[in-house]
Image 1 (tube, rainbow, N blue to C red):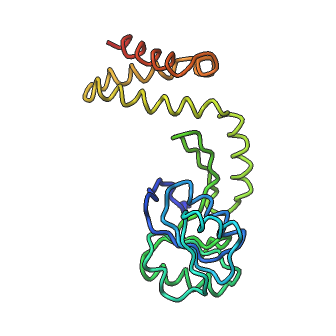
Image 2: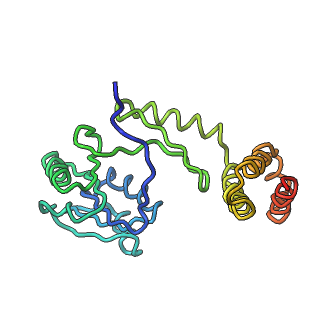
Image 3: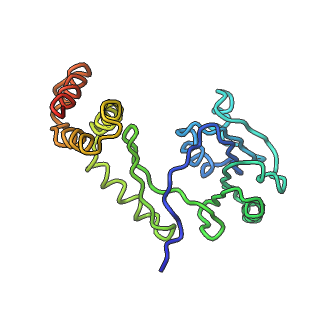
Length: 214
C-alpha cells in the first residue's frame, strides 16, 4: 500500500503563510512557523492574546475578521485551524483549486501536508510521522529520541556543519578524501569533547582531523 505523505524539507524563509483561526490550536502551529522565519498572516474574528503579542512585536500580521473565499490562493502555505468546520472545508477547497498546500488541523482528509513530530538539535532535524493515522505514536517516539539525542547534539550538529564546509573547501572533487575526513569526525568522542573542551579547542580538533586526512 503506498504512503500518503512524502517527508520533505521546504524552506519557509519569507514564504507568505496564512493561518486561519486565532485560538490555541492556531497558536501551536504559529509557534512552529515562527521557528522557520515565515511571513505569517493570521485571519480570525477572535485572536488569542499571545498571537496579538506576536503581532505587536512585528512577528506576524493579524486581520481581525472572517475568512473571505478564495483569498488563501494568494499564499504559499496555508493552515486552517478554525473552530468552524465549514470554514476549514472552504479554505481546503480554495487551496486545492489554486494549488496552495494546505493543512487543516486534525482533519487529514482535507490536508495536502501534515506536521510530523520534530526534534531539533541546531541544524539537525529529526521528524517522525505516521501518515496522520496515529499522531500520538509520533509524539511518544519523539520523547524517546530526546533521550537518544541529548542536548550536546546541538553542538555536535553545529560543528558538523562547520567541518563539512572545511572538507568541501579542501577536497571539492575528491570523494575518497571527503569520506575519510567525515569518518574521522564521526569516530570522535563527541560526548566527551563538548563536555571537556571549549570552542577554540574543538575548532583546533577539527583542523587536526583535516590534517590527518592529507
